[in-house]
Image (cartoon, rainbow, N blue to C red; front, side, top):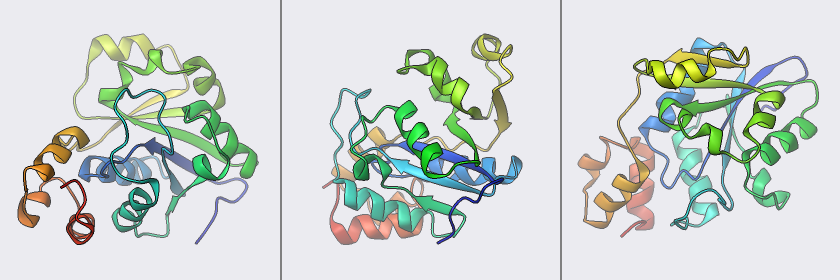
Length: 201
């Protein structure tokens, strides 16, 4: 498993990944390619202070789903939030990764739908000070973009966004969505893992 080397440029993609879906996979892979990143560190939330709802599936099983979703060696599934007993706030995860991998350039990846909420994130200004932000978007939202156009730390990247939401997927799984239907939202490997482990039922 490769690790970020000094002088390299890596993305960071965080989230609950409950479950990881094609939207996450497309966002990561297309931004990695278009921004010529050396790789992406995937950081699943061990605890999530921002969300009101509890995480459904145990941390270890979400990590295993991520291993199935991102088998390429250019992706690292990081358990740093659990290993270092971090708060769950993005700023703390970024700082911990920068401490572990000095002299590596990091960019934090978010989807366009998250951007409108970004100002509500804990210490969001410090996040921008600590790292660049790469925003995957499909269509331009001038109102949202104009709020950030003056920042030289936020970059918009055209991506083929998949309309998938973890909340909707969990509900469909609970209602008995079959393997073929699952593959509209999930990679084949993740769908098979969910079926094998009988998750979200």
